[in-house]
Length: 65
Ligand SMILES: [Zn+2]
Image (cartoon, rainbow, N blue to C red; front, side, top):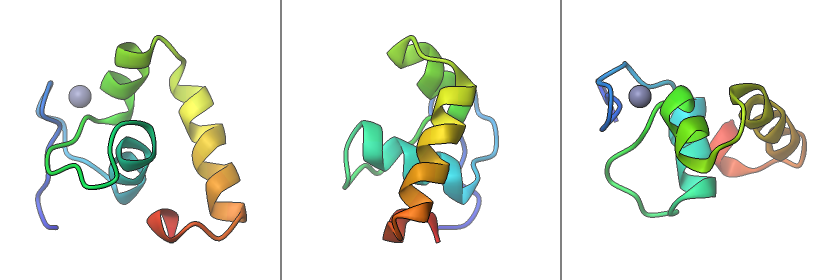
């Protein structure tokens, strides 16, 4: 899982970016968008994605450990 980059803009990805992509797009995804590109793709704000990640993490979701 090292050195993953955004499939759209090439930005380095965090675990949160990858987790958010899996939640929003596809659980078994092999290429990922960064948070900014995900937000643009879904016409939502990056802050909304942050809130979503925080919510899933508080629920103990395995994607956001
Ligand atoms: Zn990107």
